Image (cartoon, rainbow, N blue to C red; front, side, top):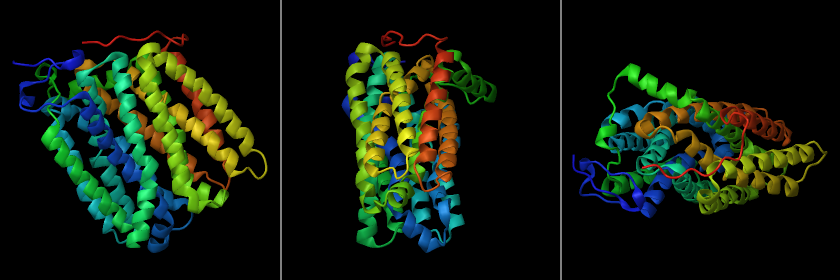
Length: 421
């Protein structure tokens, strides 16, 4: 098979990719914005939850299921595309996921009842899961080691700019068009734009020699190994826990900021501050991770996360906690997630170079389903205060540390890992 060597020591690409080329910078932007379609699908609708609930006759915390159903279904859906991407290539599976993202965004805009909307949101999350599962596999096709952690951090920088502005976009669409349904129309347009970009610019990154057969025992064995290897399972479960706390914040953020702190008009700005802090920390991580190593950086960040979460719990336990203590501490913990998420994910995927699609799917399934279910539960515990969220953030971080210690056999702060060819 003919192949070509990519710049920077990256892996060769298959002959199916000849005629297309993409540089590292463009690839990072493309993968980030693919994943950002998922984030936009979650966060853009947040400012419209009150209008949506009023229009469809929804009461109490049930409005949160518009977010929770998507997250949980997306987690389940990530189990599917990896095996097909390992057999047929990354591009066909990406196009399939984008098609469903577009079609079901339009269907959500036409929903006539809350139950119908929830069913469509679940279908959208499930069938569009490839836009979540495949970018890490595509990056792993090209690089490994701490260089992968650096690239994933840069991806998260761009990816997190979307959650930072998505609520403002959603609020702007709501104000301009006067109907929450148009937000789903904007989602569909974003999907169309990404489909065109991927079609024109993305080469097939799966190496011919790494293609796997659609053989259930083989797929099962590959996925099982990705979520049972002791050296990596702690990182998969650990990231599921800390991001479960983040999903809990996302689920309840509109009510928490609008009702508990009476700052509903400032919600897009506050959400943007928190998400922006995550973007800045991911950029910072990309600058230091190859020097210090993904393990050292993420372990320090996890201890700091526990300390900040403890402070959040203390303030939340005081009468009349103010927005001026909640927002800085929440922003600090979201910043620390920027040093945890990409590094944990890269460490967990590192041993699975030849089955990156299946491994990314299996780990994404475990991470997303656990995190989404936990986040939905945390959000539903909202009681008019920040206390349930603070307890959840502290508890999930401590348990995450326990899982990491199990994977590392009690030894933390390991040295950097070189890139593998």
